[in-house]
Every structure is written in C-alpha cells, then in structure tokens.
Image 1 (tube, rainbow, N blue to C red):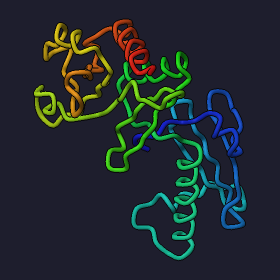
Image 2 (cartoon, helix red, strand yellow):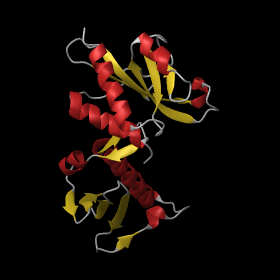
Image 3 (cartoon, rainbow, N blue to C red):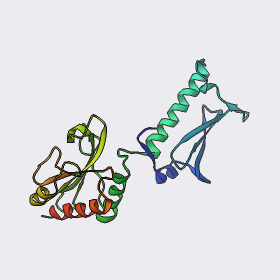
Image 4 (cartoon, rainbow, N blue to C red):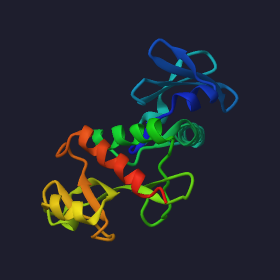
Length: 214
C-alpha cells in the first residue's frame, strides 16, 4: 500500500511468525476457510485462501465472479487486509534518502521524534527541544515552485534556525534559501536532494538545536 512502511515490532505483536525472510500468519475466515497471509521484508503482502478440504480457493480473485458466498469471501479478505495495514504498518510520509537519514540522526542524537501538528499539512513535521518545546527543525514536502525552482513537482526540505548575519553570507537561492513560509532573517531552508552533504546538514542541524536553547 502506498505510503506505508512495515513495522517489525507491530507485525510480530499481531500474530505473525518469522518464516525465513518473510512473516506469515494463518487464520480461519467464515468458519471454514483458511487465509494465509505472507509479508516479505519489503512489506509486500500476498495471500492464499484454502477451503475446508485444503484446496486453493481463487474465485474471490476472478473479475466478475458473483454470488453471496464469493461476495462474503471478498469482503472478509478485504477486511483482514485493511486491519493488517492499519495495525502492522506505519505511515511513511517522507521518501528522500537524506530525509530518512536526518530523522534517524535526530532520534539518535537528540532522542526526538517528528511531530505532525497540522491536519491540513500531513507532510509537515517539526522537531522540538524537550526542555523549552521550541522547534529547531521542520521537514516538509512542498512544490518546487514555492522556492522558484520549477513546477508543481514535490521536493523535501529542511527548515532550520540560523543567525541572520550567517544567512546573509550563505544565501544563494540554489543550496541555501531564506526560510520558506517563515522568518526570512533567522530561518533558512535546505533542499534534501543531495545538494548538500549529510555532514554539512548535520552540522547546521546541531547549530539550530543550540540556537533554540533559551
């Protein structure tokens, strides 16, 4: 399913067992059928249904197949899959490799998790210091045109605190931008598309963290 990432801890708590590199669970449906669910390490879900005699049942996969029993199997199959995606997968908002590494770095360095505060903007996440609750980083997915870089294609960005005099020196409209949708004197925007190295981003992230200490 799009924008979903398998959570190993959740899947094991949902009754799945490890089978080589896969996870597997078998359960009874409609009192007489056995549904086998297999999820590989990449999160791909496949299912098999067997009837009471142990024979494969596939009518629920046939386009145009109808009838009360087939309809019941389809409905139950969809219900189980929906529950698995809700219970065993996490939402994966961001895609950029740099973005995911930055989120992991923040977890390890500052023990902070992304906070999604705005229902209207589900792809905006902030990180805040525990002591004063001031945010030091914002990750968002926005259209390129918002930074005057092109069209409606989405890009992932990182907004950080910065000293005004430093931003005046490094602002170039290619690697460093004045804070998008924020204070353009004390916030800057970075592209998370390999334009900057992770080392440089981490250094500026740590500085942003220190700038919101008071």
